[in-house]
Length: 298
Image 1 (cartoon, rainbow, N blue to C red):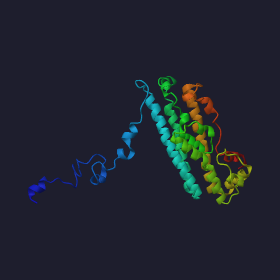
Image 2 (cartoon, rainbow, N blue to C red):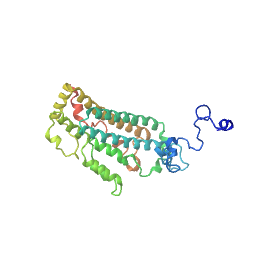
Image 3 (tube, rainbow, N blue to C red):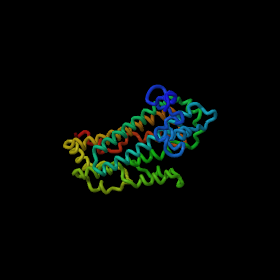
Image 4 (cartoon, rainbow, N blue to C red):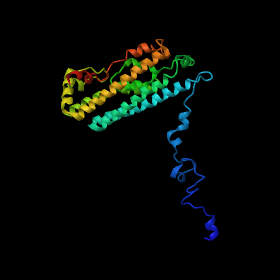
């Protein structure tokens, strides 16, 4: 190589221009040299950003400014519901494998997500009743009552309902998912089996119960749970995570009711639902009653 060629060749070791590759798109990484053009993974392609940002489509004339907030908040809720179901299913798997430490960690993650769900209501409440009314009528039959993922969460927590299933048309994919959740054991059922394998006496009728029916409190099970709290610190910590999850779901229900009352008062909800009147009936109904009933005996 001549001196002139050495002078003309850029320094690739350091300084301005080091590692410059003008033909490589932003964020392409090392995979830009592999496969056909455009096959490399980027932040946008991995997260499907273009598709995601195309999903916010207001239906009001204008459109009304606050409808964008309404859409995004509820879409984010559905994403979090998907993650919560993902984590609950994982917790069930861990309980079946008697991996109590990992199950406890997973329940803690679910609780942390529940706190985010509650906090998002603060954002939604920045929309005044008058602002909501600017586009509410355009929602037609659309209603949060139609969130099949939240229904799935209720089912896996033990609050199963044929009435909830009957509200979904037969052609909707959500119906099959709800029916599967309805027939499947709950998170509590997985815990009871785990408790049995840990050597604690769980009544046979609870282990063989009809999982489509509500979870009923059991004095015999409560006696076993009292012994867990007195003798088994690791298992009692897992019980506390169940209480945390139960309390977190109740907190979300309460804040949701107050948000609805604050926004539309006692008017019927979207899609002809009973609105706040119905939501009030869901308050203060623990999923895991036995864990609450033993508090006075510890």
